[in-house]
Image (cartoon, rainbow, N blue to C red):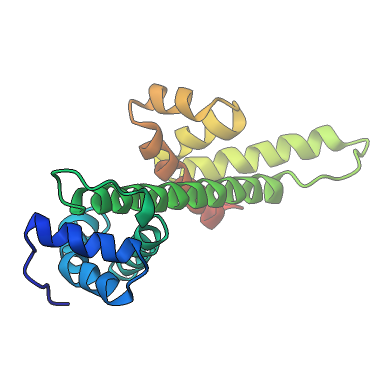
Length: 193
């Protein structure tokens, strides 16, 4: 990726007007001026995964060209408008990652618990089985990192909210989410003891 020297504001306004009128060469010129700059100065510092960053750059310019009619040229470069679009897309990418991670952690947590406490018709001696299962859980929790065990006890056995768990552990909610994910994996690796 190499960048073309940035234009004077008057030249930029002419090219933007041409793009708004459907000129594809003007669109290519706009990309040539700002593509590398948006990629290097805006996207990569915020999202260092190159493949994702390239997708964000592609989507940034797709949106720019779809909404170019909405851009009002003032005494400011279009770069700042494109920059805002790119930043919003990076934020959306992070939100999707967090949502996927939360879903994965929820699935892992449910799997860990369902392996331990499978739904079965209650038998007359169910209380004995429950105590045995609880004993196995406790022994497995004793084998893993104490912080992991505490996170699992708070979130899954005491059913406290993520926020409450994070507060009790003295960490942020995001850090608690990561801790819980690791705790579920450690528990699965150590159950049954």
